[in-house]
Length: 331
Image (cartoon, rainbow, N blue to C red; front, top):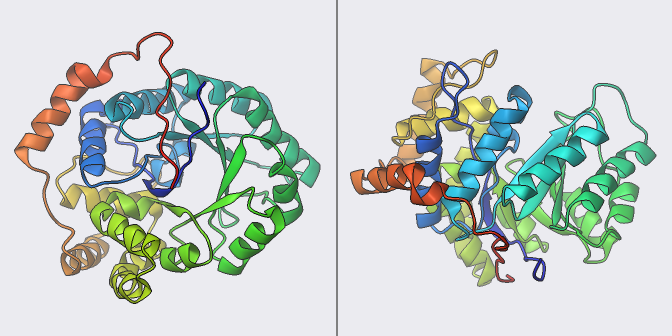
């Protein structure tokens, strides 16, 4: 592989559009990818929390990654989520998504029983050692049985290709502790549980979250203002956008984003059962928020037809043999 890419900016956590029979809606997912890239996002993350990975079979997960990689066509990097309860399965999945063309791996530990720090560290080390691409650690104490302690994060930061973390702990002070503990070896992405502007102020490199799916232009604008150090303007925009994060926290993750995308014209379908779709009252709340920030634009017929064309032919062609994944410039 060429020199490792530097990830930064806005990486939407993509939804996983599936029909009632479990088939992946490749055309819808391709249309969403086209829309997000046109909006200026810096990368894409299939199979994050918003992507409902715990409810998907392995074949579905791989088809989703395949669809996103081919739709992206190396224009932006794709960081694919890899989550498992066993180290063996995680290593296997990591190898498969990289073989499909993913530029990085978002590594998640699913656990039913408690696992020691040594076991947690060994899990993430095994994934990193199995693939040549950058690894993004993901920790979400709200949903995970086992968390990444600061001590484990510090030790993992010594692994050459572990260079990033998305921490969804809601504790922004913990992010500063991670930056201090790892002495710059680990770069931090904000989650929807954090205020993105605050994370970028303390040295974060961007935002990796589900809400960026529905407000991509606004998210990119926020990032660009932060990069330029225009903090008064950053906070004015952040205050306007915070209602989206609040809705995301108030309602279930995937149902909220899927409902919003349906309002924007993307037929992503309902959340995967047994998750329930948003109530009529919740939908009205989300619609009101989107209207207030100008985020109810419907994708144009040209975009949708182009996405369908990409899904049917060009975007779904295999990468040429020996070609490298996208190398995104440093931010």
